[in-house]
Amino acid sequence: MHHAFTLSGETLHALPSGALYWPARRLLCVSDLHLGKSERLARRGGALLPPYETRETLHRLEAEVDRTAPATVICLGDSFDDLAAVRGLEDEARLRLARLMAGRDWTWIEGNHDAGPVEIGGTHRAQMTLGPLTFRHIADAAQTGEISGHYHPKARLKGTTRPCFLLDGDRLILPAFGTYTGGLPTDAAALKGLLRQGALAILTGPRALPMPL
Image (cartoon, rainbow, N blue to C red; front, side, top):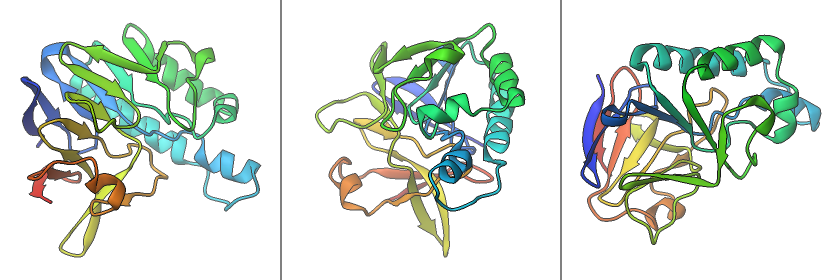
């Protein structure tokens, strides 16, 4: 139920969950997990949300890891809602992360919410280039062959709003994978300035559904 497409000569799969899979490299990529968001909001005196989003986000990530059996995992930044949220992780969540990371090349890309959760292992980079593709948190309009996150794009179809990938000939922007994450409409000025004419939104849901913007 994925949507296959080509970027910089490489075949990639947009998965219905909002994760990205690169079959040739056995690479799974997710963006904007925002683990610990409810804890961070409570700590800073914000809205009190049910504290289950970390558990749910890790459950969904585990499902994709089990399904794709990746050798490499890249998390495209804002993996935690802030660095203090790393320290606030429950032991169960730490163990689940450790099991997911075991035996895999796991890279945390720095985001604007977190500078890289150094204390939980993995590799930590500002950005990462593999072959013709560069993985970073925030898109750079001057670059090509780019995979990024940050904007949490969402598209509307038949009265329903869904997180979506955004794809043109130069770049792919991933949806937020985290459970408690808002979104930016695809017609927002920040996104219009990044995407070329003819860009696609690939909606998440029961299946990955491409739709012209």
